[in-house]
Image (cartoon, rainbow, N blue to C red):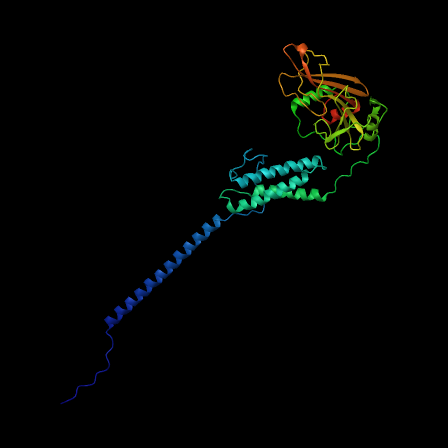
Length: 380
């Protein structure tokens, strides 16, 4: 039989090849579009996240507006604090209180560098900073501790500078001249208004305000004792009375850290019960008091129309505590000596039967009165 002719190899039909090519192209196009879309979506999403994160970060300016300082009070809860400071945690309240105490103590030390207030200010500042460090770990959002921390750090810097500054050298002491602390004329930080008015009433007009310390003179006070006489010499002239106690004179009209009140048994018990001598920094007699703690009958005349007094003792600051009690003062000024006789009365039903419960005679130089008036800023 005749053989069939050999045919050439068959090729794909054009219709099939075109369809397959179109499908592949379409699939590639879809994949490309999807890839581009996902990339754009991811880029936009990352951009939004970055913007959100950047907005949430604190903005630091080259010239930031300073935060207002906390209104520091001596006690927790006092004073108004700016928004964001109303946090009632005990550690935070204690820190605020200690910062206030440190500021007050530092101001007091600047008035009287001889005091121990600088050490008190240091202790308060250290405690405040430690408490604020603790608060930094537990403070809720919205509580900004930075202003109070800055204030405490400024106090610490001032305290360190003060500790490095040598104290003022006190003026050289001269025998026979009144010796007081360097800043004796500084006005008291606290003064009871009632007692200030009564002290002014007692002393005003008895001397001219002056800041000039005075010298010893031959002015006799009692039993041949003169003002600014050395204490040892005065005690010899008084017969060496038995000592009771010494204590600083802290009544506010008198200079701080300058005078000492010394109590002795009376060398003349038939006339008075106790002798008191006030001395300066050189142990020189400045004031003398004769005290009767158990007087018999009233000695000073009373006048129902006279001023009502609270102050009983013009040196120690003793006051009357009972509304029914009456205080009488009699002032006798014979420059250079001022004498104030004071008496505390417990009235009976009949004013003539009043009982005297305390009597003191105070003798001081009028020049000392001038220093007190100057310190209290009393007009002449």
